[in-house]
Length: 220
Image (cartoon, rainbow, N blue to C red; front, side, top):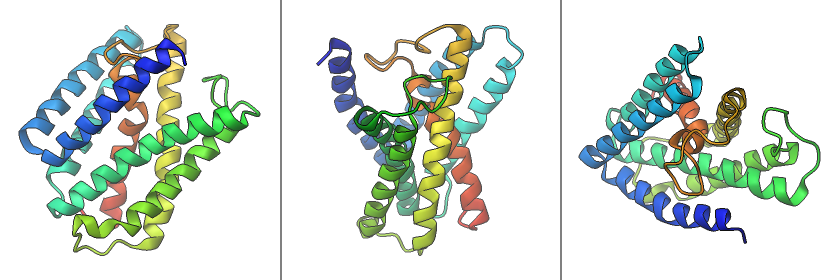
């Protein structure tokens, strides 16, 4: 087990439960963490994009993404539903990362794209598969959240596939810009993981998508 992997594992064990607790608490702690993450992400993006023409587009996108995260946790139909959807998104994105890593390492096979040489087709499909399984678990355990709004089974099964694909696209987008800037990570804020953008690249693309999905399902 490499030193880098140990640092990554240790960071994950500490950070993920802490973030899940802060999401649960909401209000001041959640909003404060969101502001900190936004400012760090903004700094990392400006540093990564330098004076390129797409810098302003990225800044605008970060504003939209973080506003979507804020809105989803604070302003939707009811507290339990907000919490359910928020955990659902975060854990599906984590499952996407985990599934891509596990299946990619175990099966290997053809590469997915030159943008990120370590990613494989097997990993991409494994990411979708694990997200689907996690979504099924959430559907089975939804009563824990005491949700009064009916959650359509078909929607809950189709949406994770879309979320996983979009999460992977977000990951590839940041990988593309890192390659253009000739850097390995967007920062070194999280030991073993790199910067905030390295860990949130997929999820930042997913939240605006979920806002749109909820709008079309008339749950906003």
